[in-house]
Image (cartoon, rainbow, N blue to C red; front, side):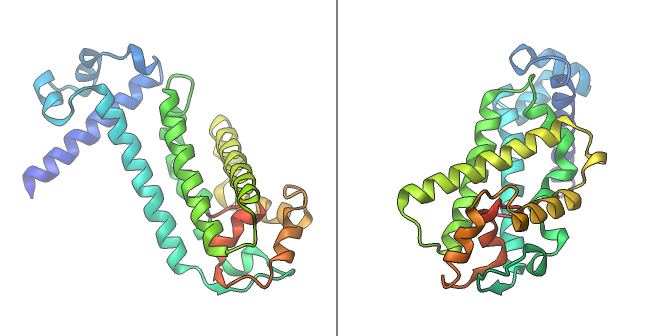
Length: 226
């Protein structure tokens, strides 16, 4: 147990040092020597944990995506079962603490580095693919009557919209827009049609669709929780 904890502490130190380096230089330009100097470890210690810096950043990315999927599953299990109708309002069924932005709020600093100009494009692609996967699950649970083309258009729209919002959030201090404020704003815009641009009408059209968790129907109207 002690050995395992020590390994975890070492890897946490390496990851923290690596992200710190990425604030000032691009991923491609970071060397193992720079990393081991900052982390105050020797090269052999680094190579006991990682084959190279590519494996290191992939482990950081995979940890983040594993936590994201776990958060989604937990929120999904706690969401109430509801039937869609014209009066559906996200806040009636999903507490602010469950909203999707809540997951990202404590990780904004880490994401700003991974997805910033010093990061690598693959990090953004992996996160976008994961978000798209979760939105796809949500749409499936809501069981809307959509053709394959309509489903793809809706899925791409929701994924692009969320990633755009997240990117903006990363570029601006969160003090100006907390996760709960983002959740409330999103819900207000859905009800008013400001962001949905007709998609909310689609919710009314599928109000007889099979019952699904509230978190599953939100992607249909500018999702705040997939």
